Amino acid sequence: MFLHQIFGESTTYSWIVGYLWLPSYSYSQLVFKTIGWEPYSDIGTLLGSFLAAIFVSRRFQAFNAWIPKTWQKRFGSSELKRDIGVFLGSYLVLFGARMAGGCASGHILSGDLQMALSSIEFFAFVAFSLLVTGRLLYGGKKQR
Image 1 (tube, rainbow, N blue to C red):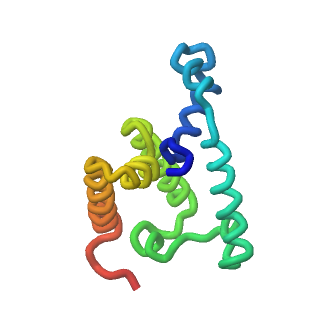
Image 2 (image 1 turned 180 degrees about the vertical axis):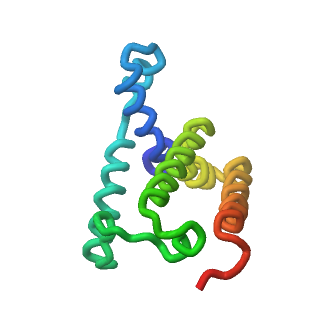
């Protein structure tokens, strides 16, 4: 709100991909001229989560073979299957964010600050989709 521009993190992804694979494409040239503070926000998010995992929760799991119990109960303990699931899920989230013209943080946070009805509606559908996907992925029974 204070920066007078939208807030989001998925834009950096499209900038990097465009720069690496389509540097001479006219759209890429236009986008490169508009790169602002967003990559610094992404780096800050990465470093902030890393420091919180080390100093706050003391549960840094990035280099440990750790599979959540809910995943193990539903899909087994294969690390390869978990890696493939995480990669595909992450790719779909980033692809969907770019197809929607921005990520959920951009649509929800920036739009809600402006009291945009479309952002409130988008947030409701995100929350509903989260619940439906969780029910389909992990089943209807409580996990213990």
